[in-house]
Structures are given as C-alpha cells and as structure tokens.
Image 1 (cartoon, helix red, strand yellow):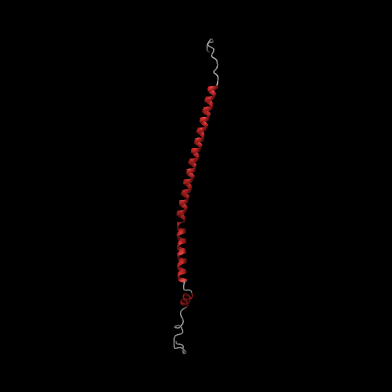
Image 2 (image 1 turned 45 degrees about the horizontal axis):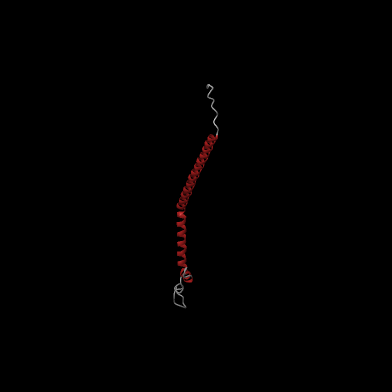
Length: 109
C-alpha cells in the first residue's frame, strides 16, 4: 500500500523506533558497554571474595599463633626470673645465717 500523496510506502520515510532511540542518544552503546564492564568487574570482585576471605583468615590465624608464642616465651622468661630471684634470696639467707655452735664434749645421739 502506498500513500497517494507521496507515492511511497508509509514506513519507508520514517526510521524504526529502535533507530530513532539510537539516533536520539548516540552514546547509549558506549554507556551499555560501561555498564557491562562494571557488572563484570563486580562479578570478579564477588567471585574473588571467597579467596580473599580465606587469605584474611589465614593471616589472622598466623598472627594469633605468633602472639600466643610470644606470650608463652614472655611467661617462661618471667618464671625463670622469679626462680632465679628466689634461689638468690634463699642462698643469701643461708650464707647470712650463723651456724649453730658445735659442742665437741657431748656424744651425739
């Protein structure tokens, strides 16, 4: 069917609706590409979340184990210091004590 005033088909003179939308917004394809890239990047971040969480967990466990060892060494050093101080005080008391007099005239029981 042709239009009697123009002798052309009615759809031939007008572009399709999709072509009009693209002509109205020339950067829409670039914007769609940016959106797709952002979604892909977010998917990569979400995909790496398990690996990052596992790595963080390993670091936390290693740090906790290191601090536990440090605390154990510190406690052991403090125990040795206390033992040495006790030994030194005991030896000082022994050396400062006067020996009991020995009575050489009496027989020992």
